Image 1 (cartoon, rainbow, N blue to C red):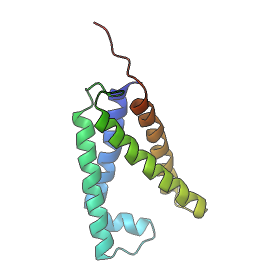
Image 2 (image 1 turned 135 degrees about the vertical axis):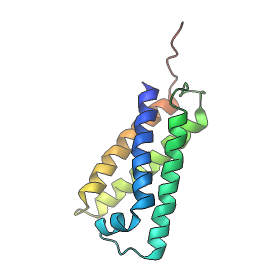
Image 3 (image 1 turned 60 degrees about the vertical axis):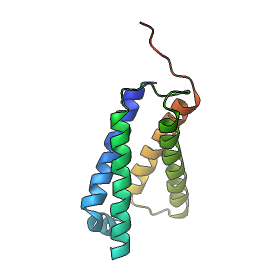
Image 4 (image 1 turned 180 degrees about the vertical axis):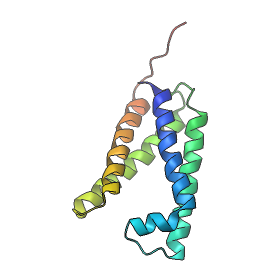
Length: 130
């Protein structure tokens, strides 16, 4: 698997989510039919900071060999994030049949990243020989 592409794509997705949550928390909450209270706004902004930090970490590590024993904390952290979030999103969709189209798109994206990071985390990388 091309881990450089995977790390770049996950970095871009999380970076966009992070920036949007940091600077537009009221609009995002309103679009998801939530009343933007001060606590929810603060929670969304903190979540945006987490996304942005994860995006920066993935961007900086995109050129490393990832998989197997190489960069194990990085690959497992990404796998855990995407897998747990994908499970939560899938559970939400099964309980709410009238979910927003944004939740559907996010669920598909998270599931694809969870599968990709599972493959990277639990298989050996193909290292190019000089």
